[in-house]
Length: 225
Image 1 (cartoon, rainbow, N blue to C red):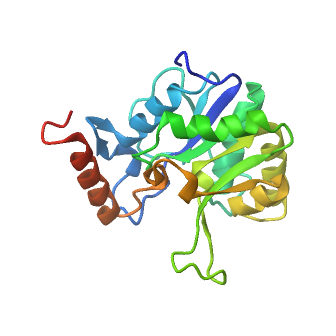
Image 2 (cartoon, one colour):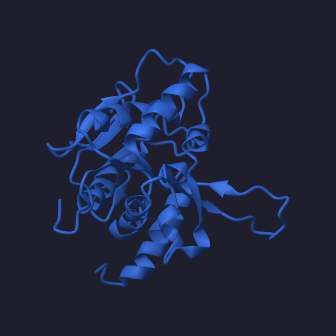
């Protein structure tokens, strides 16, 4: 935790599941000299004064986690799986630790920044009635009929309300995080408003990982500084 941490803020990081599209555990991908999951955790430690909860599947390979990180597993009572189950598990941990706010993220977000997390959570702090902030990419064509692309694993929520909303969706055999955000009355945030839209990039495939590595080398220069 740093001096710029936000009071009563925790985080949930989904650890990648089977990583079937990547072909290798995403949590273990090398990034700036350490596993990608640990890079994400380090970024979140700059913001959070409550636990960072890493949610994994039983038996999933993970790097050694810092002692203050809480490791949780998908609850077995929800056999339909999906990311909402992991978020529900993490929200339960944060609820027990009396966190008011939570960043919801994934282990394959190499360009996540502390400033981005602060931006989301401070909007919740400033608007007491707001249940969540959900970033999205607008249709590339500009056609209103095209679908927007939301990023539930780059969002922020109020813990108590989100835990209750997730429980309600799961009880009805729902599995999409968007159903939770609907119940929260979350505000959608256009990615075009962000200082750096790369915070939303993920590495689901080898191609996406290679592209992220190339962008990072370009940013850091030939010395890797």
